[in-house]
Length: 211
Image (cartoon, rainbow, N blue to C red; front, top):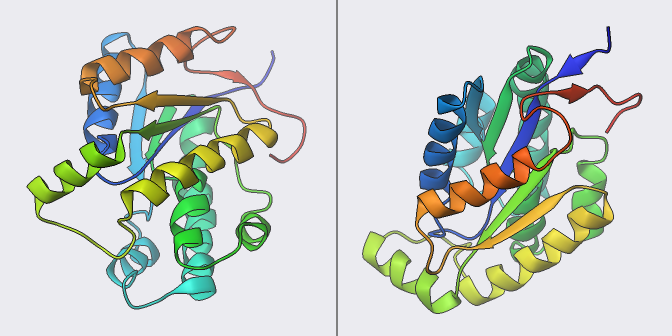
C-alpha cells in the first residue's frame, strides 16, 4: 500500500484581510464534505509559542526571527506532522509567508530567514490573502488595534514578493484579493483549489525526502 498523509494549507497575509474568519469558514466547509480538519496557528499555543506572541513587541530582528523559527520547528514536530501522519487536513493561520514579510519589516534580510527555516515542512497549498491598502487601513481603524508590523502598503508589496519566493521553492500558491469578497467566497476559492489537485483533498503520497 502506498503511504498516505494529510494535506497542509497555510493562510498568510496582512492584518485585517480576514485570515482568522476565512480559516473558520474553510474548516467548516471541508468538514461538511467529510474532511478531517485540524486548525492551528503560529505562533503556536505551546509555551514557546505563547512566549513568542507575548514578547513580539520587545524582542526584535534576528532574535525574534530565530524564536519564530524555533517555535515553527516545535510546531511541526508536535502538532503539524503528527496530524498529517494521521491523514488529517491541517489549516495553519500564518506560516512561512508571514515570516518572509513580518521579519523583513523588522529588518531581517530574506536570505537569513530562509536559512533559519531551511528544511521545514512546506505546505501543499500556501494561500496569500491580500486587499487594497486603503481597505486594510479602514478595517484596522475599525478594530482599533495596531502593532508595529502594521504597514498596509508595504505589507501588500512584501506578501506579493513572498508569493513569488514560495513559488520558486515549488510551493503551490493561491493569491486571493479579499477587498470585495466575503469570507465564504474566499473559502470557496481555496476549496476549489484543493479539489482541483489530483487525488483526494485530504491525502497524498509521502515525499521521498525532506521538504
